[in-house]
Image (cartoon, rainbow, N blue to C red; front, side, top):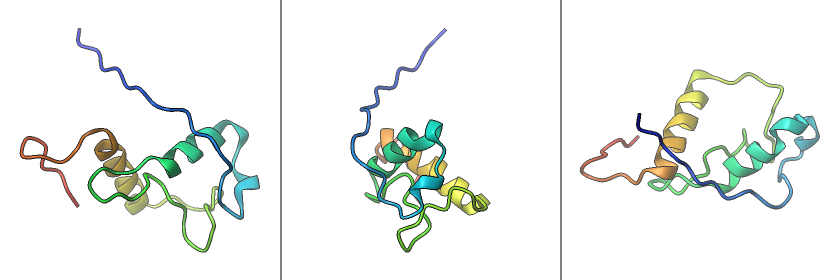
Length: 88
């Protein structure tokens, strides 16, 4: 069976959100990684919070946010090309 291998650099630094104390300990490294990893097409981070310096980890996560996150995750490791034409 085919197996995909993904290499991910571990994040360093502090979470830049005013409400970062509300982010669960188990999720902090993933949130930091998602904020430092860019979508190769738009250049935007996979996740960038809700604005005004907040991440809102206890808030609602909308369908729109979920779709953008999945799309940016996909494009973070797969540049858009003629063979891979997915774009917003």
